[in-house]
Length: 513
Image 1: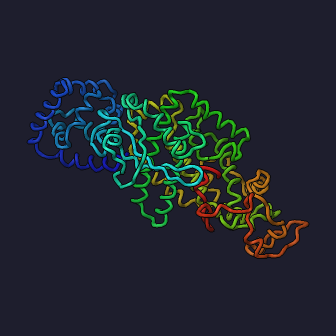
Image 2 (image 1 turned 30 degrees about the vertical axis):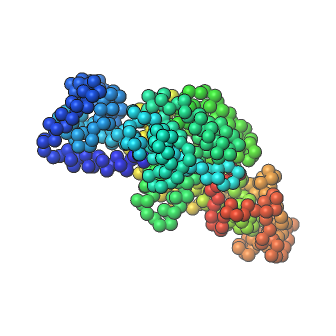
Image 3 (image 1 turned 45 degrees about the vertical axis):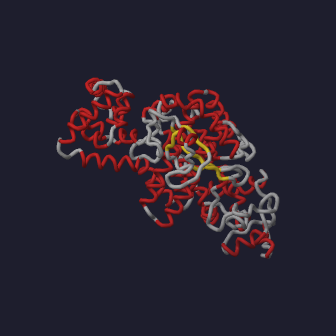
């Protein structure tokens, strides 16, 4: 569904071409007459419809909204015209000039099958989906290039524009009429994806939760690469692609929720259980899914939910912070008595920086998708009116926000980026981080393989001036306590599941994190 880049290019080209002479206007008028006749619609009726819409809609309404208010017949006629003929139409009928120049209209024209070049007004469109089978549950991947059902099933097209192979096809809503056309195929497609990915919860909504979460995880990983090279254009491109993909799935999730009140009730119950204290991995396997559920919940993302998610994220990160297969900072197992520990504050964040960045990504995508609209029905109408296309400038806004995420290197700016209103003091947060080490062991997320004296010995090698707690004697640093595992079963998740020093763990947002 990569339309935004093409929309900008076409808008610029349209503007240049439309500044030419009127020779093409007569040719365009003839072409319009021909197309209108084929559709049994006269040119005058088409123009009157456009004028009618233009006159009835207040001047305060944007051109983009006027485009989307045009009758489907008019949009269909315009979708059949070549760019050259559209330029001519703009000269013949000045009232259409501003509309045809608009970003929204060009985006609507781009909503077509990349293979057969047929519009969503003529064929059923969706996207190809590839499943990576890794771990207990697979992950979803798609380039979100629009593909018709006929091209996928009839012609066996199973490769994206960029060459990504896929095995499955998922229909998308796009417009109200298109949704009615593809609705019967949605559940079957989602069940196929659930079965192929070996999802424990095979419900339709859970497949979409997984898919949306996978998009954010991949976007975070690609942004990390862009951070390394500091390429602004690459970051904008990646943001644009991710936003379009996320919006397409959010559109699907939103309309399913709008049709079935049970989906919203389930999302509310999921969040309420979490807020009531059912935060364990068995009760809430994925924090990322919880954030997606907040998109369709009645309350949305509240301060209470935001803080609860941050707490559980820190708690689940502890074992990866301490273990050799993770950040390898076992010295933080020593619980210093100091009111404020700058070392703990700094190293706790740095040891899981990538996972905290991922949480910022998840929060950013959720905030961008839902915005300030409170009613799901109203939001559903807005997205349908926009044909599922993100608002103009969304990708650039996301890229700018992602660049800010790059600069987040400690907890205070992290809290600010997450939108936390009541910032904790250093003293309170130091105590909180120590408490998370204890709670992580109590919940069974980790086992403590060393005494406080042994942990103190490791800590003094990194922080010689650390305060010594009463009754704790400094132990010896041995090969055993520098390589011992903190995982409950005594063995870290090796084979690609761990992370090196100064690196976080993004995969956990799907499952055990």
